[in-house]
Image: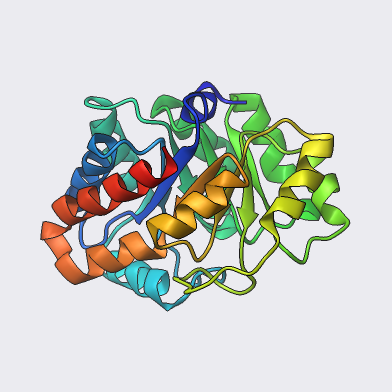
Amino acid sequence: MNKGIEKAFSKGKAFIAFVTSGDPDLETTEEIVYAMVRAGCSLVELGIPFSDPTAEGPVIQAANVRALSNGVTTDKIFAMVKKIRQKSDIPMVFMTYANVVYSYGIEKFCQKMVETQMSGMILPDVPYEEKAEFDVVCKKYGVDLISMIAPTSHQRIQMIAKEASGFIYCVSSLGVTGVRSTITTDIGAMVDLVRQVSDAPVAVGFGISTPEQAKKMANQSDGAIVGSAIVKIVEKYGKDAPKYVEEYVSQMVQALQ
């Protein structure tokens, strides 16, 4: 496990926050990361926008469109991470799509991750059976390719968990990302299956938006992941979003303690 990810899960339940890089602009994204750090966030997921984000619901899709129309590129995001690293050592991972990494060059992308102290990446459109070409390079550079398990994974859960590195992203709901009023998946049963074959931490995401939901999910796992609810705040407040994100993340972090 990458040291950054280990650190994120070392102090009890982890709160993991997602933000789309470049929405509304990279300067605001940078300030949002600092706001999340102040609020006690354990790990930040930086979304690299992509034109066809298949796992995302309308909220994050719209954020991708806004970021891309502002001219955000992978190189500009790496430059932003370099600036963040001058002020913060918060563990961070990228959340993006295979095509983004592939077109950049997997080797070059992983080298840049090491240079900017990024701990890992999540590629929701790369199934377990097709992860090898990314995983081999990630292992070479000591960054984690984070596996996702879904309620429909069934007998594949243990197969995926056995080889997982970093942490395991447990998808709480079927469908795409987005805020949900209730989460009905038996998370406890999914986590139990993972625990039988792996000691990697498990964090639950997709659909979590309230402190109560975050607490419930974290009670059954090692942490909670929130994305769409934060992206909605950014959409609403734009450049003024950092202070509102800080308030929201603070409440979520407190619920996990």
